[in-house]
Image (cartoon, rainbow, N blue to C red; front, side, top):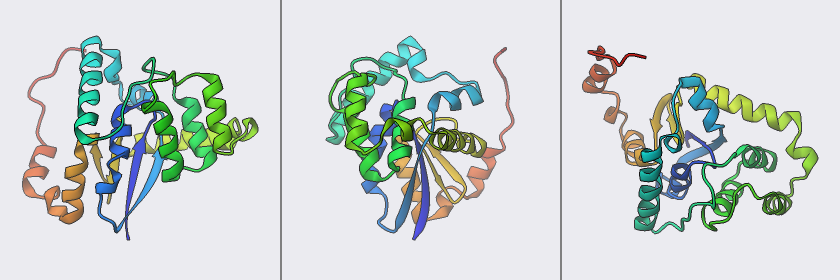
Length: 208
């Protein structure tokens, strides 16, 4: 059984779409689902999220809506976005990040069009997953999310979703074909041309 780590955040529509495509991975791949705080990754690498640039936000929302429909994936943006996903991330850690639990939370956010931050709906979701307030706010749960996020950043995961296979990182929901190619033959990535582009010098840089 081969191992793959998948980093995700519930705030990310791309994470949701990628989750719905996990079945496209080979059957002999064991996927470890690791929730991380996307905002912390952005801060670590000094990046902006797509929703923080007005025109990119508009494009992202249009593209994800069209792309999900073209893939036959049920999809509807929540009533407001971005939202603070911290409670949902802690919830899945408290409940256990199984595919069933991750999928239930994703569906609650990305198929209903409801307000993701609605406290009443969140409380009902937590109860459905058997998680009480004490467990949800426990230091253990908070520390686990922090550790997952810090580990992802240390490995070079600058965004979500990110796939990690044999120490190699693949970013984005559209990287799944690349992941599968690497799983089938590591030479899809580990070859002379890839090594060349990895070491390309910077020819020009914008002023900071």
